[in-house]
Length: 348
Image 1 (cartoon, rainbow, N blue to C red):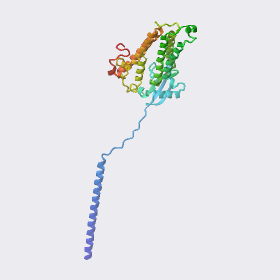
Image 2: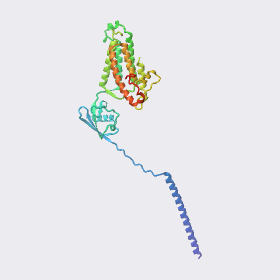
Image 3: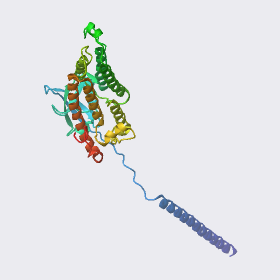
Image 4: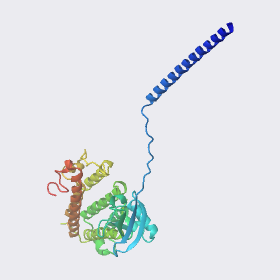
Protein backbone atom coordinates (compact mmCIF):
# COMPACT_ATOMS: atom_id res chain seq x y z
CA UNK A 1 0.00 0.00 0.00
CA UNK A 2 2.75 2.35 0.97
CA UNK A 3 4.67 1.51 -2.17
CA UNK A 4 1.65 2.18 -4.36
CA UNK A 5 1.17 5.62 -2.84
CA UNK A 6 4.85 6.38 -3.29
CA UNK A 7 4.75 5.43 -6.97
CA UNK A 8 1.63 7.56 -7.46
CA UNK A 9 3.40 10.52 -5.86
CA UNK A 10 6.44 10.10 -8.08
CA UNK A 11 4.26 9.85 -11.19
CA UNK A 12 2.45 13.02 -10.12
CA UNK A 13 5.78 14.82 -9.77
CA UNK A 14 6.81 13.68 -13.25
CA UNK A 15 3.57 15.00 -14.70
CA UNK A 16 4.02 18.35 -12.99
CA UNK A 17 7.64 18.51 -14.11
CA UNK A 18 6.73 17.68 -17.70
CA UNK A 19 3.96 20.28 -17.66
CA UNK A 20 6.37 22.89 -16.27
CA UNK A 21 9.00 22.01 -18.84
CA UNK A 22 6.42 22.22 -21.62
CA UNK A 23 5.21 25.62 -20.42
CA UNK A 24 8.82 26.79 -20.17
CA UNK A 25 9.54 25.65 -23.69
CA UNK A 26 6.35 27.30 -24.96
CA UNK A 27 7.30 30.55 -23.25
CA UNK A 28 10.74 30.44 -24.87
CA UNK A 29 9.20 29.66 -28.23
CA UNK A 30 6.78 32.56 -27.89
CA UNK A 31 9.63 34.87 -26.94
CA UNK A 32 11.71 33.68 -29.90
CA UNK A 33 8.74 34.05 -32.24
CA UNK A 34 8.01 37.53 -30.91
CA UNK A 35 11.65 38.54 -31.29
CA UNK A 36 11.81 37.12 -34.81
CA UNK A 37 8.59 38.93 -35.77
CA UNK A 38 9.94 42.26 -34.54
CA UNK A 39 13.17 41.66 -36.42
CA UNK A 40 11.31 40.94 -39.67
CA UNK A 41 9.01 43.94 -39.27
CA UNK A 42 11.92 46.28 -38.55
CA UNK A 43 13.67 45.12 -41.72
CA UNK A 44 10.81 46.44 -43.86
CA UNK A 45 9.25 44.86 -46.92
CA UNK A 46 11.27 42.34 -48.79
CA UNK A 47 12.87 43.78 -51.90
CA UNK A 48 12.91 41.65 -55.02
CA UNK A 49 16.30 40.74 -56.35
CA UNK A 50 17.06 43.10 -59.24
CA UNK A 51 17.24 41.35 -62.53
CA UNK A 52 20.59 41.59 -64.28
CA UNK A 53 20.16 43.60 -67.44
CA UNK A 54 22.29 42.59 -70.34
CA UNK A 55 22.68 45.65 -72.57
CA UNK A 56 22.35 44.69 -76.17
CA UNK A 57 24.77 46.51 -78.43
CA UNK A 58 23.41 47.73 -81.72
CA UNK A 59 25.70 47.32 -84.69
CA UNK A 60 25.50 49.07 -88.04
CA UNK A 61 26.69 48.18 -91.48
CA UNK A 62 28.45 51.06 -93.27
CA UNK A 63 28.49 50.99 -97.05
CA UNK A 64 31.25 53.19 -98.49
CA UNK A 65 30.77 54.51 -102.04
CA UNK A 66 33.07 56.64 -104.18
CA UNK A 67 31.52 60.12 -104.48
CA UNK A 68 32.66 60.49 -108.10
CA UNK A 69 32.06 57.06 -109.61
CA UNK A 70 29.29 55.93 -107.21
CA UNK A 71 31.04 52.53 -107.07
CA UNK A 72 31.20 50.55 -103.86
CA UNK A 73 34.59 50.67 -102.17
CA UNK A 74 33.92 48.45 -99.18
CA UNK A 75 31.43 47.53 -96.46
CA UNK A 76 32.31 48.08 -92.80
CA UNK A 77 30.37 45.73 -90.52
CA UNK A 78 29.94 45.57 -86.75
CA UNK A 79 30.16 49.34 -86.31
CA UNK A 80 28.77 50.23 -82.87
CA UNK A 81 26.23 52.98 -82.30
CA UNK A 82 28.74 55.03 -80.29
CA UNK A 83 31.30 55.02 -83.12
CA UNK A 84 32.09 58.41 -84.66
CA UNK A 85 32.94 59.50 -88.17
CA UNK A 86 36.56 59.56 -87.07
CA UNK A 87 36.29 55.87 -86.12
CA UNK A 88 34.74 55.09 -89.52
CA UNK A 89 37.68 56.79 -91.24
CA UNK A 90 40.08 54.66 -89.24
CA UNK A 91 38.19 51.47 -90.16
CA UNK A 92 38.13 52.54 -93.81
CA UNK A 93 41.90 53.04 -93.73
CA UNK A 94 42.38 49.52 -92.32
CA UNK A 95 40.14 48.04 -95.00
CA UNK A 96 41.58 50.19 -97.83
CA UNK A 97 45.03 51.57 -96.87
CA UNK A 98 45.06 54.12 -99.72
CA UNK A 99 42.33 56.17 -98.02
CA UNK A 100 44.20 58.15 -95.34
CA UNK A 101 41.95 59.49 -92.52
CA UNK A 102 43.42 63.01 -92.77
CA UNK A 103 42.51 63.23 -96.49
CA UNK A 104 39.08 61.59 -96.36
CA UNK A 105 35.78 63.47 -96.44
CA UNK A 106 32.53 61.56 -95.77
CA UNK A 107 29.06 62.69 -96.89
CA UNK A 108 25.55 61.34 -96.46
CA UNK A 109 24.77 62.35 -100.04
CA UNK A 110 26.77 63.54 -103.02
CA UNK A 111 27.27 67.28 -102.93
CA UNK A 112 26.25 67.48 -99.27
CA UNK A 113 28.35 68.86 -96.42
CA UNK A 114 31.23 66.82 -95.09
CA UNK A 115 30.48 65.16 -91.77
CA UNK A 116 32.45 66.32 -88.74
CA UNK A 117 34.69 63.78 -87.02
CA UNK A 118 32.80 63.99 -83.70
CA UNK A 119 29.39 63.04 -85.18
CA UNK A 120 28.19 59.60 -84.06
CA UNK A 121 26.81 56.97 -86.40
CA UNK A 122 23.64 56.64 -84.32
CA UNK A 123 22.78 60.31 -84.93
CA UNK A 124 22.81 59.95 -88.73
CA UNK A 125 21.55 56.37 -89.13
CA UNK A 126 18.01 55.87 -90.44
CA UNK A 127 18.36 52.07 -90.44
CA UNK A 128 20.93 49.41 -89.66
CA UNK A 129 22.58 50.04 -93.04
CA UNK A 130 24.22 53.45 -93.55
CA UNK A 131 25.54 54.61 -96.92
CA UNK A 132 28.37 57.14 -96.95
CA UNK A 133 30.13 58.77 -99.89
CA UNK A 134 33.88 59.24 -99.65
CA UNK A 135 35.97 61.97 -101.28
CA UNK A 136 39.72 62.43 -101.37
CA UNK A 137 40.25 65.98 -100.09
CA UNK A 138 43.93 66.04 -101.00
CA UNK A 139 46.86 67.06 -98.85
CA UNK A 140 45.71 68.65 -95.57
CA UNK A 141 47.33 71.35 -93.46
CA UNK A 142 46.38 72.66 -90.03
CA UNK A 143 44.67 76.03 -89.60
CA UNK A 144 47.57 77.28 -87.48
CA UNK A 145 49.90 76.68 -90.42
CA UNK A 146 47.47 78.52 -92.71
CA UNK A 147 47.32 81.60 -90.47
CA UNK A 148 51.07 81.71 -89.88
CA UNK A 149 51.78 81.48 -93.62
CA UNK A 150 49.02 83.97 -94.40
CA UNK A 151 50.48 86.63 -92.07
CA UNK A 152 54.21 85.94 -92.27
CA UNK A 153 54.29 86.35 -96.06
CA UNK A 154 52.91 89.93 -96.20
CA UNK A 155 55.22 90.98 -93.35
CA UNK A 156 58.38 89.80 -95.10
CA UNK A 157 57.28 90.79 -98.61
CA UNK A 158 56.56 94.39 -97.59
CA UNK A 159 59.95 94.68 -95.90
CA UNK A 160 61.66 93.51 -99.10
CA UNK A 161 60.01 96.31 -101.07
CA UNK A 162 60.69 98.81 -98.29
CA UNK A 163 64.42 98.02 -98.47
CA UNK A 164 64.30 98.73 -102.24
CA UNK A 165 66.44 95.80 -103.23
CA UNK A 166 68.09 96.21 -106.67
CA UNK A 167 66.16 93.39 -108.32
CA UNK A 168 62.89 95.32 -107.76
CA UNK A 169 63.79 99.01 -108.21
CA UNK A 170 66.55 100.82 -110.05
CA UNK A 171 69.48 101.16 -107.68
CA UNK A 172 70.57 104.62 -108.85
CA UNK A 173 67.07 106.01 -108.63
CA UNK A 174 66.58 104.54 -105.15
CA UNK A 175 69.84 106.05 -103.91
CA UNK A 176 69.06 109.46 -105.40
CA UNK A 177 65.57 109.87 -104.00
CA UNK A 178 64.91 109.95 -100.27
CA UNK A 179 61.87 108.28 -98.82
CA UNK A 180 58.93 110.44 -97.85
CA UNK A 181 57.97 110.30 -94.13
CA UNK A 182 54.67 108.68 -95.13
CA UNK A 183 56.63 105.71 -96.54
CA UNK A 184 58.25 105.06 -93.16
CA UNK A 185 54.93 105.50 -91.36
CA UNK A 186 53.20 103.15 -93.78
CA UNK A 187 55.86 100.48 -93.28
CA UNK A 188 55.57 100.80 -89.51
CA UNK A 189 51.76 100.50 -89.56
CA UNK A 190 51.83 97.56 -91.99
CA UNK A 191 54.38 95.65 -89.92
CA UNK A 192 52.52 96.31 -86.67
CA UNK A 193 49.32 95.07 -88.29
CA UNK A 194 50.72 91.66 -89.25
CA UNK A 195 52.95 91.26 -86.19
CA UNK A 196 49.81 91.67 -84.11
CA UNK A 197 48.11 89.00 -86.21
CA UNK A 198 51.01 86.57 -85.71
CA UNK A 199 51.14 87.12 -81.94
CA UNK A 200 47.38 86.67 -81.61
CA UNK A 201 47.52 83.45 -83.65
CA UNK A 202 50.20 82.04 -81.35
CA UNK A 203 49.00 83.29 -77.96
CA UNK A 204 45.41 84.62 -78.13
CA UNK A 205 43.21 82.84 -80.66
CA UNK A 206 41.85 79.35 -79.96
CA UNK A 207 42.59 77.90 -83.38
CA UNK A 208 40.36 75.03 -84.52
CA UNK A 209 41.92 71.57 -84.39
CA UNK A 210 40.58 70.87 -87.87
CA UNK A 211 42.46 71.00 -91.14
CA UNK A 212 42.00 72.45 -94.59
CA UNK A 213 43.26 71.53 -98.02
CA UNK A 214 46.63 72.54 -99.41
CA UNK A 215 44.76 74.12 -102.32
CA UNK A 216 42.93 76.41 -99.90
CA UNK A 217 46.24 77.42 -98.30
CA UNK A 218 47.68 78.31 -101.71
CA UNK A 219 44.62 80.40 -102.62
CA UNK A 220 44.71 82.32 -99.34
CA UNK A 221 48.43 82.99 -99.56
CA UNK A 222 48.15 84.01 -103.21
CA UNK A 223 45.51 86.61 -102.29
CA UNK A 224 47.36 88.14 -99.32
CA UNK A 225 50.86 87.86 -100.75
CA UNK A 226 49.82 89.14 -104.17
CA UNK A 227 48.02 92.20 -102.86
CA UNK A 228 50.88 92.94 -100.46
CA UNK A 229 53.36 92.90 -103.35
CA UNK A 230 51.16 95.26 -105.36
CA UNK A 231 50.63 97.63 -102.42
CA UNK A 232 54.28 97.62 -101.35
CA UNK A 233 55.56 98.22 -104.89
CA UNK A 234 53.68 101.51 -105.25
CA UNK A 235 54.19 102.85 -101.74
CA UNK A 236 57.94 102.12 -101.64
CA UNK A 237 58.65 103.17 -105.25
CA UNK A 238 61.36 105.85 -105.53
CA UNK A 239 58.95 108.08 -107.48
CA UNK A 240 56.16 107.79 -104.91
CA UNK A 241 54.78 111.10 -103.60
CA UNK A 242 51.78 111.13 -101.25
CA UNK A 243 49.04 113.84 -102.37
CA UNK A 244 44.48 104.58 -85.65
CA UNK A 245 42.42 101.37 -85.29
CA UNK A 246 44.96 98.60 -84.51
CA UNK A 247 44.70 98.83 -80.71
CA UNK A 248 40.91 98.49 -80.75
CA UNK A 249 41.09 95.37 -82.92
CA UNK A 250 43.60 93.79 -80.56
CA UNK A 251 41.57 94.43 -77.40
CA UNK A 252 38.42 93.03 -79.03
CA UNK A 253 40.25 89.82 -80.03
CA UNK A 254 41.63 89.44 -76.52
CA UNK A 255 38.12 89.77 -75.08
CA UNK A 256 36.66 87.24 -77.56
CA UNK A 257 39.33 84.70 -76.63
CA UNK A 258 38.20 84.68 -72.97
CA UNK A 259 36.83 81.24 -71.85
CA UNK A 260 33.44 82.80 -71.05
CA UNK A 261 32.94 83.69 -74.72
CA UNK A 262 33.81 80.35 -76.36
CA UNK A 263 32.21 76.89 -76.29
CA UNK A 264 28.61 75.76 -75.89
CA UNK A 265 27.99 77.75 -72.68
CA UNK A 266 29.44 80.99 -74.01
CA UNK A 267 27.92 84.34 -73.12
CA UNK A 268 27.92 87.45 -75.29
CA UNK A 269 30.85 89.80 -74.49
CA UNK A 270 30.02 92.90 -72.48
CA UNK A 271 31.93 96.20 -72.67
CA UNK A 272 34.26 96.91 -69.75
CA UNK A 273 36.41 99.78 -68.53
CA UNK A 274 38.49 99.66 -71.75
CA UNK A 275 37.09 102.33 -74.13
CA UNK A 276 37.98 100.18 -77.15
CA UNK A 277 35.44 97.58 -76.01
CA UNK A 278 32.59 100.10 -75.95
CA UNK A 279 32.01 99.33 -79.63
CA UNK A 280 30.07 96.28 -78.35
CA UNK A 281 27.28 98.72 -77.45
CA UNK A 282 26.68 99.36 -81.16
CA UNK A 283 27.78 96.29 -83.16
CA UNK A 284 28.08 92.56 -82.57
CA UNK A 285 31.38 92.16 -84.48
CA UNK A 286 33.56 95.15 -83.52
CA UNK A 287 36.75 93.32 -84.49
CA UNK A 288 35.70 93.61 -88.14
CA UNK A 289 34.77 97.27 -87.59
CA UNK A 290 38.25 98.08 -86.33
CA UNK A 291 39.86 95.99 -89.07
CA UNK A 292 38.10 97.90 -91.85
CA UNK A 293 38.86 101.18 -90.07
CA UNK A 294 42.54 100.28 -90.11
CA UNK A 295 42.59 99.66 -93.85
CA UNK A 296 40.57 102.78 -94.62
CA UNK A 297 43.08 104.82 -92.60
CA UNK A 298 45.93 103.13 -94.44
CA UNK A 299 44.27 103.92 -97.77
CA UNK A 300 43.83 107.61 -96.89
CA UNK A 301 47.41 107.82 -95.66
CA UNK A 302 49.05 106.20 -98.69
CA UNK A 303 46.48 107.27 -101.34
CA UNK A 304 47.31 104.39 -103.67
CA UNK A 305 44.96 102.40 -105.88
CA UNK A 306 46.12 98.90 -104.79
CA UNK A 307 45.44 99.71 -101.13
CA UNK A 308 41.99 101.03 -102.02
CA UNK A 309 41.08 97.90 -103.99
CA UNK A 310 42.36 95.63 -101.24
CA UNK A 311 40.36 97.62 -98.65
CA UNK A 312 37.21 97.32 -100.76
CA UNK A 313 37.55 93.55 -101.20
CA UNK A 314 38.32 93.02 -97.51
CA UNK A 315 35.34 95.17 -96.53
CA UNK A 316 33.00 93.06 -98.67
CA UNK A 317 34.38 89.80 -97.27
CA UNK A 318 34.26 90.97 -93.65
CA UNK A 319 30.71 92.25 -94.05
CA UNK A 320 29.67 88.74 -95.16
CA UNK A 321 31.45 87.19 -92.17
CA UNK A 322 29.91 89.75 -89.80
CA UNK A 323 26.36 89.14 -91.07
CA UNK A 324 26.80 85.38 -90.73
CA UNK A 325 28.05 85.72 -87.15
CA UNK A 326 25.32 88.26 -86.36
CA UNK A 327 22.64 85.72 -87.33
CA UNK A 328 24.24 83.13 -85.04
CA UNK A 329 24.36 85.66 -82.19
CA UNK A 330 20.69 86.50 -82.75
CA UNK A 331 19.72 82.86 -82.21
CA UNK A 332 21.85 82.47 -79.09
CA UNK A 333 21.79 85.93 -77.48
CA UNK A 334 18.69 87.62 -78.90
CA UNK A 335 18.03 89.65 -75.75
CA UNK A 336 21.53 91.15 -75.92
CA UNK A 337 22.01 92.12 -79.55
CA UNK A 338 18.55 92.49 -81.10
CA UNK A 339 19.14 96.26 -81.39
CA UNK A 340 22.76 96.08 -82.54
CA UNK A 341 24.15 96.20 -86.06
CA UNK A 342 26.47 93.52 -87.42
CA UNK A 343 29.55 95.58 -88.27
CA UNK A 344 28.82 99.26 -89.08
CA UNK A 345 26.73 101.09 -86.44
CA UNK A 346 23.15 101.87 -87.56
CA UNK A 347 23.92 100.80 -91.16
CA UNK A 348 25.06 97.18 -91.49
